[in-house]
Image (cartoon, rainbow, N blue to C red; front, side):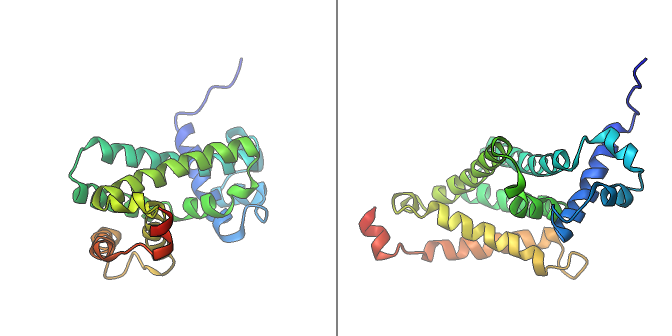
Length: 206
């Protein structure tokens, strides 16, 4: 008779992913073994294989799970049908708060995705591009001319750069938590957005 799943099976899988993401983020995917993942989780190696077939499966689950949460975030904010300014501010707030609890998973997505095979990499990066596109649409809603000048994506990537780099220096237990930082990021980006001018070469090409 096949062994049934424990009631906490899904919770245990998520715990394994969290520990593995931490190890991958600090040591890199190639430098981390299944034995180290098992030790970090307080499990035997045999028990770990009950939840995941191999280290590659864990990598896919971390990267895909993270990008799916970001994708859902963009869709949820779009469904609220906010005005252009409120929409972008809410996107920034939600993604800063999401990254707060997923810094390691995000590092895995950005740095270890190259170790995925082509079908998995294409699928995950496709979702990531859709996330970027959702933010780009929010930026264009405030500056429609950026789309004509082909600057919507560069401006969006500058915004992501600000958010991503924040987690290399920000101390969440300091005076400013993530909830306080999110509106500051939005203020800085949106305050500077009206002043952006397309370079002459870009304007001519457009």
